[in-house]
Length: 503
Image (cartoon, rainbow, N blue to C red; front, side):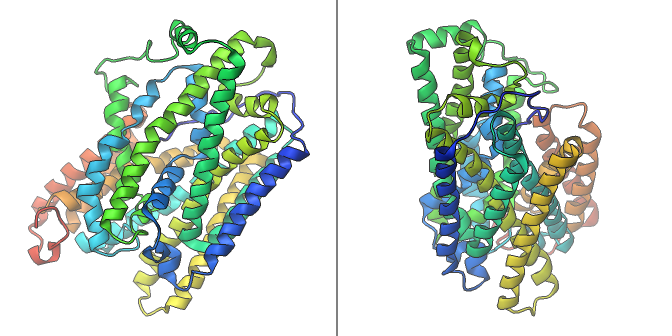
């Protein structure tokens, strides 16, 4: 789930000394991540190992990795913040169960049957090189900027409510993430994701249990207080006004919003091709869907529980704390010694899981969609070296951007960049839907539809709700793409064999 986060965060809160024990726990976690990277590096003999893990990843590990990739540090803080300051209405965006059958039965067979490395290889096979490179290029730009965001925001929150230094947090998270991703490739990313999932979900569950224990009241009483204060769905707008943030906008819009992540975003699609076959890949996708909703519920419950906790303990909350920093504030001020270090490790885990996925998937896209495509005679040894160098470069740019934002207060510029790039997720999804579903579509129509879609979504961005962007992008790409394809004439049926749902 993608949520916005108010980066103004906090005025100034009293800092809590993080302490030697907490730092020790956090250090052990970080060293463990590097150790996993070193262990996985033994298996990285070629680009198939680096990009696809040699297709030897267990389905359950791939499933945890998909989950960890989607649950970023932004979500780790923003969901409790949303529930603390408002209610649970964005919980309706959990459309994973609904979208999973579409992914498994419509899109997954193409990725596995074509034996691709990059999702965007399909677009060239189905349409043309331009469609492939445009989609891959947009993905690369978005993910590079995303690294900066997922590293910067948790570091900012922690530095404001504790003695943890902002720049040090960014550097530690980023540099160590670069190291283990360079060493172990996608295999290291996936196995660190498994550990990070256990740490961040375990930490979240422990946090919720501790808050409930500290409240010392029955669950029925807590629910009653939550209902009285409109903390669940009491104030949710159930109208059919799709131009606002109504429940139906969130519920229906999230279906299209999540289409990009699960069908056209390289960082997630790459997990589908790391298992041994299509059946095990489908299990991984189902696992992600089954754990995502209860995990999201835990984070929403944390926000509601924090609201009740500070409502009955107002003296423990200082002035100047904004909603987005409420969970980190509780962690460093209320958690037992040692446990706080583990929960902060969970926050670091959320950041590193997303950042490492972005680094590896960007390197995969750049090598596969650009370098190898334009220089097909390059050796696998050269491609593997280039993949590691591009991982380093991508990570360095992301870390550098995060540090620049931290030192020069460029938050608004970075947010504007991500918002503009993020507008095109529906356009990219539309290209895949156009190719997979509609035999009539051709290369000229696809590229024309994508260009018009990007323009339309950009023009209406201030009129429609954020969750409607993807629907508009997909609808425009498909309709304009089909119309343009009709004008351009039929494509050779032989070139489409095995590339659409119609055999």
